[in-house]
Length: 440
Image (cartoon, rainbow, N blue to C red; front, side):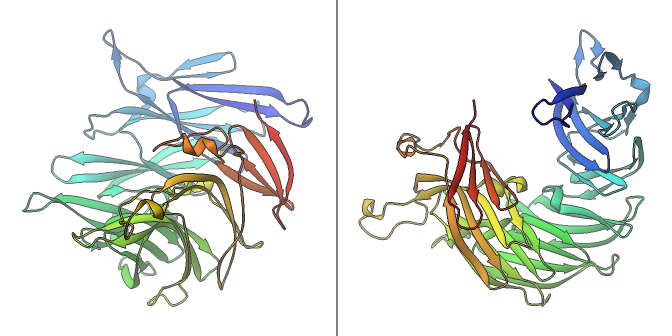
């Protein structure tokens, strides 16, 4: 596999011109843009073919460069899943500038975080003595300059890119530590660590919400907001004002959980996850429809859920639960848009109360458009690309359609929804259809 970067001149929008093409071995992992530079990461498995290690190569136009082993960064850390991680720095405004790159022989990265000056690469692995750990590599970037300056590790496994950040000379990270209990079951707890720029731990708070799974984390200034879940959803507010002494300020326990947290102003959070119903027997809960929550965190010691909107029944899904790029929110316009695959239960199929573990049938797919303000969450309307409702009756347990909306964006006063088969335009004011284009 190869990862390819194509740069086009679009000064004439009707005739884009390819002006540079770069490819590197391995699959695309992540990318970020700082100023004029795009920093792209690709991962290639480390393997031996006919006794020879297959080193990654880079093609820039007509130039082919095989990366020599002597230029590959390596840390002597055991991992049975070695891979080459190649970082490219590409100036997209000055395409004549020489491409720079650095390759690392490490494990497989789970997530990255990038500030204006540093890229943090995280790799979760199993250590024979420490159990599950997350290794962290701080890579200094400045234009085309790439230099690995520090590495360290913390206990536990990182969830995603929002489980870490850099703030005023410190790197903060939230992990889940898993360990076996005497009964032979896997126990878990959430931890938050603060590291200096040498990636040495200077502060920590551990064993948060024992036996509950971390669903989301968000670092905002001197605070960390953490959501864990087993039967109810504790939203923790953690103070990092003193980096060496983090502490829990407050928590809120409500049904459901949030898989994604998004800041709204200084005093609010928007959470997207699932509603839940506690099981009558057993120490767990059944997840239900997609839940959007509005949290007031102005009082750090007493966070509140001031509004919620639940969509559909068990089986309802949204890509936002796994990919924040599907989440569209504009604070000035008070608009929130998320794609939804809607499942609803036909209560006539049940003679009595619908059991909490019952799944609904798929009945609709598209985007829900909301107004969000400090008083609550309000549905404005829905947009779909699917014109034949029979596709849901034929879908069974798994739904797929090239007209399933994946993304939404707005330009001016118009909302654009995008699926593999169509781009549709709606007026933002009343959501009336304006135009649509079928894609080949």
